[in-house]
Image 1 (cartoon, helix red, strand yellow):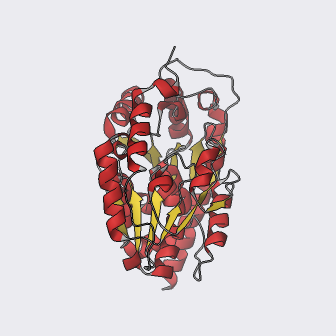
Image 2 (image 1 turned 180 degrees about the vertical axis):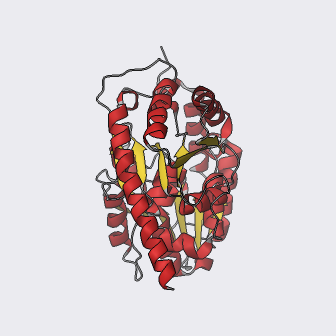
Length: 374
C-alpha cells in the first residue's frame, strides 16, 4: 500500500519550501510592463500554447516577456526569440533552489504573471509578487484559484481553454490557436527527406514514447499492429522516434520482433529542434498521447493517436484520427499501456491508417502540382 500524499517526502519538502518562500520580501509592485508566463508542464502543452505565447510577445515586445519553463521546452522558446527562465522539479522541493528562482524573478521586476499551465499544480502564483496575476482554474485544487486575481475557465478541452485565455488577455494581435505551421516555417531551417525514405514512398514517424508507461501499449500489441500495417501498405517506411533508455528498449523490442526493411529506429538521434524539423517534413505521424502527437497536430500533419484516457487533447479535426480501444484487453501482459490502449484492434488501426495514407498521398499530389506551376 502506497503512502498518503501528505506523508511522501517530496510533498513534505515542497510544503517546507513553499512555507519559507512565503516570507520572501519581494517588491510586489512594478511600474514596468514586463510579463512572466509560466509554462512548467509538458512539451506537448508547450506546442499547443505556443501561438498564444507569441501573441503576448508581440503585444508587449519580446524584450518585455519571459517564459518560465523546463529544459525541453526552453530550446523551443529560445529558437523563436523568446526569453526564458529555466524551471526544474527541484525548484519545487528544494528551499534553496526555490528561493533562488524567486530572487531571479523578483530582480526582473514583473508587472504581470500569466499562468498558462492547463492544470496548475505548481503554486508559484502564491509567492510571486506582482500587481496582475491571471491563470486557469484548477478543479482538483480549488485553493490555487485564490492565488490569482483573474481565474480563466478551463472547461476540459485545451482548445477551449486557450480561446478563453486569449479573450481574457484582450490581445490586439491574435494568431490562430494551436497552429504552428507558419511559426516553424519562418523560424526553423528546412529539413530534407532522409535518403532512407525514397521520394515515391510515404514516410511515417512513429513516436514510441509518452509521459508515462500507462499511455503506451503492450509491446506484443504494437508489434502486431505495425506488422499488419507494413503488410497492408508496402510503400510506407516507418521510423521509430523518441529519446531515452525506455524508448530505446521499447523500440529495440519492436525492431527485433518485426525485422522489416520498412522499419528503422532513430531513437535519441535528433535534438528537439531537429525533431520539430523532421515532423514538419514527414508525411504521417503515429503515436500515443505525447508531445510529438501534439506537435504533429499543430503542424496539421496527418496524425493517428493511440489514445488513453486524456480527453482534453483528443483533437477533433480532419487531419487527426484517434484510435480508442474497446476496453477488452488482449496481448501479452507487460508493464506498458492501460485498458484503453491495450484494447485497440488491428482492424481499427489499419482502417484509420489507411485514411491517413489517402490524405497524405493527396497532400503530396497537391504540393507537387503547386510546385510544377511555379
